[in-house]
Image (cartoon, rainbow, N blue to C red; front, side):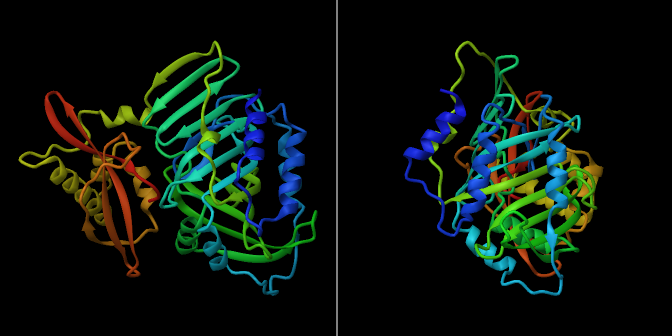
Length: 402
């Protein structure tokens, strides 16, 4: 049985159902579209701060015309019209959903377009995914269970298993994502329009940020259904002006209160070669000249110490120290990432703890105050390591959104 057929059968036999507020027409359109490409599933590599994944597999370039047609087919109405919708209503609703099914497209590293279909389930805090599955039109499959990633390439018949990968979708596209996005973007704009295929009222939101991710600027286009208040489509560009074909495009989203564990089970194909490894960022975490050595402290005290030094360096704009303590990126990258975020003060550094599923290190909750008196708790992962017989510590990442 093919993976997609198995998944469809699982949904048919499960008790998981979409919320009654779901746009049924969008769901029907989505299923019909993917019936046409049942033999074509597309996958790509998850990456931090985006669902937006990268793949070296060659994909369908002709789908670019579809994206352009959809993008320019929106029938916008007078901006002065006030819709019966507010982002706060969407935020409240999204708190009720822990699972999503989405279909759309993305760009690979060569700028070629891929069609994708995926499923994701949020962690308990709804800050990131704890389970994730993506399928590609080439038969490529990616499953991320907690922090273990399985990636199958049918062209080579190889399954690559990577431990310590971290959440595939971080942040979770839910309430916290839109709360943060509206707060940090300076050009949030709402326009009332209609879906040309259903004539339903829509609200289109555009916004951007110069350093939304480690790689630089991001801009977005979101489509919300006025009646259901839910997000039904979105696009993201790796530029500030929403120029060119979107780097990530979601054509349709189905919401679930939860999704079953079995959906994210990865079955190794018969005869496939298994390759294991560590993500590239793990190599930088073992660099002897990175991190810091802390003597005469327990592991818990040392974890708190390095987390406190890291955030003080961010507040001071000491990007060299930030890169030294968190070596997965350069000083310039960290400067771009944190520009526009006015960190004012470290409120508290909490006690380290071991999170189930986090294999990189201990979690240190850090509460930071911004200059508008808003506070946020960011969970830092601190890796304890031994290099040349000496114990040292390094910031390995964050658990959930940052």
